Image (cartoon, rainbow, N blue to C red; front, side, top):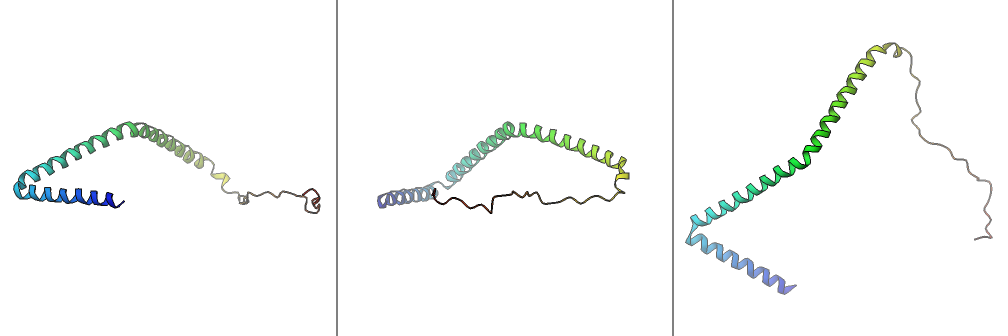
Length: 117
């Protein structure tokens, strides 16, 4: 582990010394090179984003458009059916039970035969 740390720190020191000497000897060239690398990375990133958005979102966008259309049609149906059924609202509605539980009857009075265990 210590040898690995020494190797990494040595590489970092050489990189800093190299960048420093390049900055002192040719600062304009260094900035041009950094600008070019940044532009290349940005171009690759933009192309990647465009490509992935086309392949994935095309199907998702179509599915979303279909779902939105169906939702709008359902909303129209609900609106038209609620306007015709106003006479049902005059009656008091029966309260529904919110509990969805069932009681399971068990054999509580019968004891187990403990001789088997």
